[in-house]
Length: 74
Image (cartoon, rainbow, N blue to C red; front, side):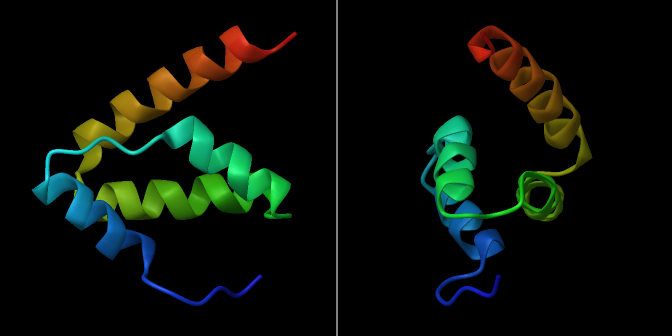
């Protein structure tokens, strides 16, 4: 699905510059309810996170996201 607006990398750069932390789970849930493919959403996020924050942050993000998803699963 094509979207219009600011690229994710620009949004994350603004967040980083202002020392803000995105609501990752909220973003993923919102994307899911908007009809985005979960694998595609993760892929887009991973690419943007790698570009903006770097590989160390990406590795940690993946670990924390997995823990959050497990704790929310029934």
